Image 1: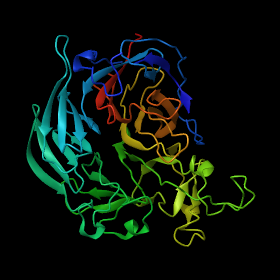
Image 2: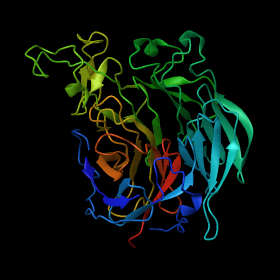
Image 3: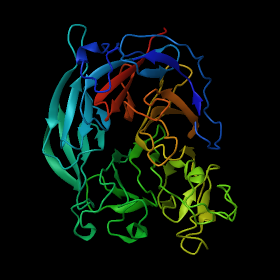
Image 4: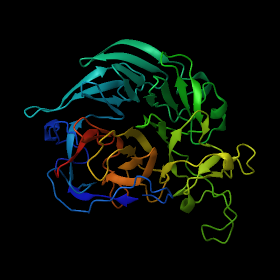
Length: 438
């Protein structure tokens, strides 16, 4: 992965950010008109700005990296901040699953800090947020609700999709590892919701009703959902691209076994079927895929490899009798294994300042199942002619050389001022990443 960064010395960002205040953030500017070992096409690639080291005012020893010509500020403190969405009247909504609420942030003015208040509370692990006109969709762990949004308030709560599986589902008996849901609304008004797998490996998810490890689709007016795409282990990243297509960023499985009859760990014995850290470190890659009706991303029988094609899972599908992996279309893009991509969003024209433009933003939460750990970051994938280019690092520095982390980005969204707003659920903050060289 190319790092396109300059160094920031972080002055108000301690590990707990206890000394920070909302007022430390820069007020938004007015709107203007203006990598991992993954083989991927170079479509939409950007030229990396030079690396420039510049100290700035906000740190306690941590270091953040942003592109040359950019800066970053602490914009608001929001403990448990997860997914983000802008309202039609330019407020930033933040979901907080643990708190059961959605927070609304009002951009700061020249003489006041960002305003913050709870928009709606009493929800069941709210996560995904999406707008269609003045309708706000909120994905809870067991359902999707719609609200009418107007003048900073919501009303008219109504059920769009119900009966989604979570830890309270009778047949799961409390065992559900990926209960948080994401939501997106297509141009035709259809509602899409991600339903994660019950755990790392559970083939029965593919036969459940409603199907798990899948992306479900419901009509614009709501109703019983159907399976739109399957084999999607945990498609937390879910968003509509500039051309109206649906994309997902997927958390792949952990502890994948080595699939070949070779000695990979150097002990003289063949390692087929064994879990070997050297192989686990870079397998399977985390897909960034365009979803079409009936698409199958293979889990748990097929695993995406570094060339973006699929390999048979040696433990669950050694002979290919469960699923013919050779018939699965390669994924369009991917991130390194155990990146843990969460929020996904797309910039729209004119996009970010040059050389980036229009593209996808992905919050990389960072790994646990890797040694050394995959570092958290915000990634950018350039968009051109309906395709995504290679992964580029836009914001990083959340992890030190020993794998210790002080922050973990969840989602990045473009703001109405062309800045990028980033949620961090470990530090409990929202950052504003903005272009300063004009």
